[in-house]
Length: 507
Image 1 (cartoon, helix red, strand yellow):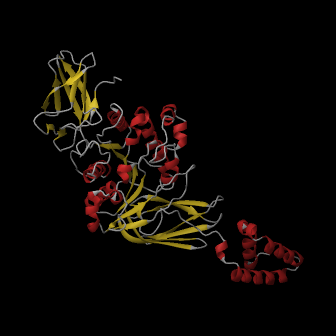
Image 2 (cartoon, rainbow, N blue to C red):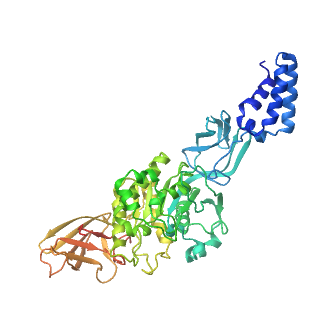
């Protein structure tokens, strides 16, 4: 009986299995009426028409699985410009989803799979907007006031989370002048999960005095700088939780399958500030959005790993790699080295800084050094977030957007040469030369075979530093700024501090 009425009846009563489960008695009544009449096609056609009409009146189509979207897709969002962006959601198995946009005359479509999920890539337009995007299945979803531009994920612990809620002076002063429809904000609330989630809470907001409250100061100032320099809309997704080590942000399977990562993850203990178990923050706060097409990631974290610094570079590198794998993209990853602070363990802060420096061996990464932006070594949350953000933005503008910015990376130790009682130190990213702020350089120490470090005499010659100590005729090692509260005073000519380092690997 190949008729339109029959097809409607067949779909509503056979295809929609979830509806059948919820509506047992009506279906038994249907089959009681259907079976005796099955031998009479003409009667069946009339019966089908009547039944379809009754269903429309008494059983609304909402019982059919409407297409749905995760929270990361909504009004006011920003799409990564000129990219084949992924959009995904849920619907009824076999349902066809049509996607039309205000920037393209062509419609895209995708069929919901047997698990009730769908995913498609569509072409995002060049920077601009606002646009509308329409998705149509059984129901229709229209997303309004969309922009196309640059989208960044802002993650880490408390120094990334720091905001108006923490009375940061810089962001509080910014609030009255923060209205900017070219900057859009999405704030993921603190969430843990035992398994990777496909959705999270949150909604896109146009930046302004109200919506900026509680949003990352570092993230906002970074985005503002990008928006001004690039002249395009910027979307910022904040996913941060204070007091958390790197392990909860790393998929549990990554840690469990690596001996070094697991060894140090097992050393972590519960604390009153945030979760410590592997994967629980990745599952709840990264997995739901990592497939969203980001331009890159900025990260400020590390303070909570000073007690287990030995495995940090391995785990941090593993975390970055896992995020890139899930994103199916070699995401630029720019992070902030932790600031000097009076940690309880001997040199634990310096050793964590060293681990962060080692992470630069992973491609498409960059590190901001902020040893000079500390107002009090007893405050683990330095107040100056603007300059931290400016340095992050300059990294992105130079390395990701290839703007002609000079001196955007801190000088970093490369090698040394020993001649008699003098040690010559050479640096990367010091082409323009080095300088001392003050009368003499501080925080340089030199040692001989006895491993006893003495203050060094320092001379800067162009982009080279020469150190010595008259009491050490045969030096073998040099350290600079290598201590929990050490704040050196040697900079590049562009004003960026030399990265703390040591030439030895002594315990």
